[in-house]
Image 1 (cartoon, each protein chain N blue to C red):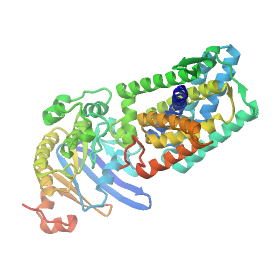
Image 2 (tube, chains in turn purple, red):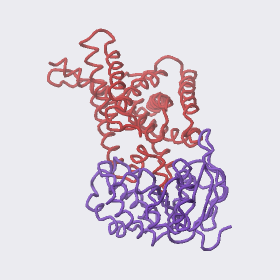
Image 3 (cartoon, each protein chain N blue to C red):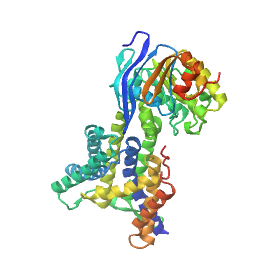
Image 4 (spheres, each protein chain N blue to C red):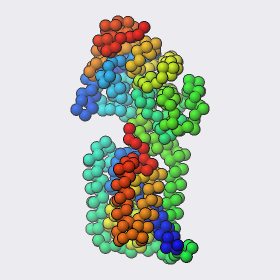
Length: 237
Length: 288
């Protein structure tokens, strides 16, 4: 049951990939505003959860976006309801220019926030004619985020944005994500717990395809034993 | 010298035909992951539509235009009613498209017989034009002109229109295109329809250079088209053009300067070499 404060409510989400039962009745809620971190060890189903929400993998269960059931909608229909997606490995279109990647991301009806995108990532404006595949990993991440931010969103799903980035780029990325989180509700999958601590308000922890903990991020990351149990790592403070 | 010029221009004519067939096949595979064997049926249907309507109206041009319209509509119908249910299921797709190829070929044979039917074309197409002493059949110039026009039109479509952008992006990563809020199924129908139109054009022009249409013309041409698609790189429009030129020219040179049947042999050797050295094809991308 979702409340007016709830943007996303997921109940009994099941995903099978081949022989594997990857998500086994995943349920959680995402409060309006701020960042909810989706955490867990490698391979517990975090990316599959995001892909399941979008319909990129076959799924069962109830998914309410601001009270509307989106579990039977095609991916493009979910996105057009205002769900932006930044995938794990960026998935920019390597053969297309930066400008073409952005044009492709424009949803019909607009508005399209090019001003915001260029304010957050001025480098992209300088590289509009460059093929995305020839850009650095950090620049590709900027482009992947920019494609999602170009449109009005109710919810943004961001998967491992800091993966493979140099430390100084992670800091820049964190600044951009903090700004993004002030504009739209974000579900963030991230292994970098310092980044999670800086950005997230709530946390949902997955283990073996099930939700094992939900609550406020501080309650998880300030408890070394719990962090080690659920995430298999300690947190540098 | 005149022999070499004759071989080069007729080789380019053959390349033009291969390109017309292969470019549609390549785009369909690149965007939709479908090995469309039914493409051969559209080649045959295009030839027969051009023959039947050309004969009825007395105009080869009208016959070709009608073939284009009919095959475009049939291809769109086939994609929306049959193929759409099978995306992601490779074996059923292959069974369906091979089945359609065989069934449509058999249907045409049962209605019009196994013999070839003469296709009437304007007289100028069967005349020759002398280039540096080499008498070149005019229909080869027509083939090359049509292929160049198709290449330019398709390049402009892919580069400058939103659907072109969707197709180019979809060839790279279809799932990500849908994750940007785009209904990629419309692009599927469009690409399939374009493929049908190009196959019809190739089928009608094959009839024009052979001065006849036959039930097997689709199957025969389809084999070379698949070789061109693989050499050029699955999903690469420019790759198809480049590979078609290489295959067409090599085949002509080898057939004349080599032993009997050397043309086919060299094409197969070239295919094997590409698969060993550069399996993604000349201009294809490495699958990630």
